[in-house]
Image (cartoon, rainbow, N blue to C red; front, side, top):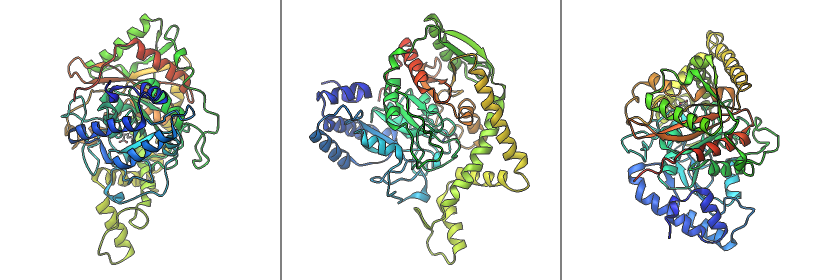
Length: 486
Ligand code: GLN
């Protein structure tokens, strides 16, 4: 029998529908893979083998059903999404012991579509970071080379997909947290348009930037999960009411012939490592041989993206994280004498250093004397960045750019230098500021490092149909990078 864990989600879903593989077999295969790889990778914060097998048995009893597109498909979910049968920590000690009484909208949708949830994946505390080193519990390792980071903040999700522990994972992307770990771990990640997937039940980091999306092995696999989780939800006021377009049936219609691929010169300059630039450029040359037109575009405010993003994200984080006060959720300090001490000690003991830094900086940029100089200014620059994207997208169908300036770096390299770490996000943040969708696709292995290189394809708001179709065509035009040897 073929190794179940090496199938794509699409192949597995087909085999499950035809009863060639049972939900129990698929689940068992993933659980075995988890047992074999977790000691090295540490992608998951918790698993529930018995619960997953019970669910798989119940599904098998019911039998496959074409109306359940993820029937029997084992998945993991980033621990920033609320789940009622798993603890939910957001990677923070302050939420240790928190068990939500409800499922996030996207999780509800997965279950309703027949998915089997194996466990919760590791992340940087409250999704603040680019490596998972900020998790309060463990550092996840890159399955391609366990000395290297898997990226972040959805590093556990990317590593669990790359290690073959599951067929897809849900992540969240505030400034790159789906695309960047997907890129560093050699999988595909989709950050949908802001508003297309409900944020209900996602522990908020930067509410005007956060978006839930899938990580998986192929574009088609991501499209399958996206089509399940997208759609209006009245419990999220920013959820878009328009009907979701059918991303799956148009997937095969994408063609590179005549497609106008924008190359922003600011993303292909000195900032990126030569091996990253080379891999992206060679993918674009392959596309052009198949008839795509490469169009140079310019996004000059990209240079302001890091500063703008970090002001806005920290401001929103300081406000969102005010709710963790030791009273309602998770952990509470012991031996306290009054309410003030309860707040101060619970927060001091519960939050890690990076989260505290962001709460303080966020409160600072929102404070009376500095609001105009920082927050208001950042909000204005954000509009410029968005307008610039919209103008560039007048000249091309999608914009293509590297995801990360470097391939995965060694664990510990930037962990003592927060500013350096923030700069590593330079290519992903502006998309969230503009609210646009982005797909991260593996385009090769770095000539020096041998580690995966990802390219992002950026589309128009709610243009996921075209974006995924083009990504699918590009994926098929490029040689596969294969899977890590574990
Ligand atoms: N690395 C970025 C940050 O730390 C983005 C994180 C994210 O997208 N959640 O804010």
